[in-house]
Length: 79
Image (cartoon, rainbow, N blue to C red; front, side, top):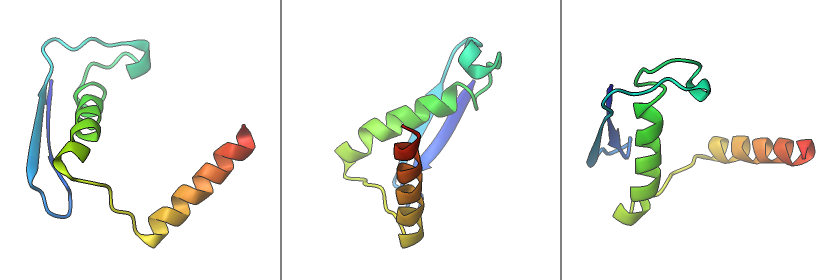
């Protein structure tokens, strides 16, 4: 299975290709061994790790920040 992605989304400069040979289904993937359950999360982890090293930082709009604040407040209440 494989996945290819570009980042940052507003002005793509980098490309990531993830290829997994013989991906395994696990309980966490609900028995699926497709790219959406294996290669995509791996790409997310790679980009999350290397983007700051490349000087690519997340950009949030006011709406995004409000949504994140609401979610954090909700999680804090849930304990």
